[in-house]
Length: 208
Image (tube, rainbow, N blue to C red; front, side):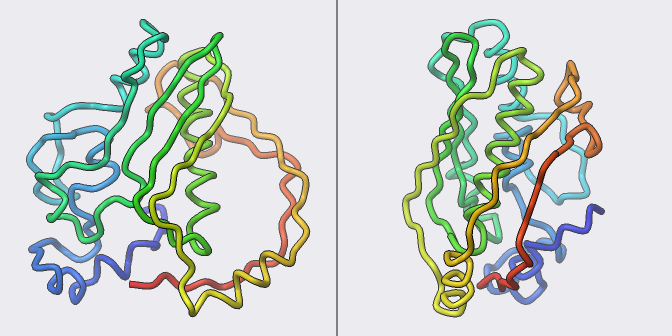
């Protein structure tokens, strides 16, 4: 619906059959979003409505509000009982949040990173998640820590990545987020980015 097609190669009919999965094309299985909000529930398809399982995102937000010194504010996206039912098991599989002096930090852990293609995307989405959670919990976003188990660059992306490394980075933009009480209430237009300068895009192909 949002015209995000990054997982098309991993959810084609051919790929799903190669994994022995009986899922409709385009279905990522019990992966990121499902595990964020319904960890432990029985997965059917992405078209079904789920009401069970553990809402890890809600639990973290509630804990930051009620017990910010807690050291167990973790969102786990690795479910050993479901991992073989995913076309591609989650690469970024753990978020841990930490509050110090009303400042919110996030440490995210990733088993594998197609660094040239998705490294910047992982940093940006992890930072945005931290900003949104900070906004609804009245904390100040502080640090983003990124742990990588296996960082790699595929041979067919080497030249493009070398081109990117030769470019001079621009000054970071500023982000402004309209204050909401619930994280579900945020809309795309509630997030504003000012002073975002960028180079021409470099075409990169996801390896499947």
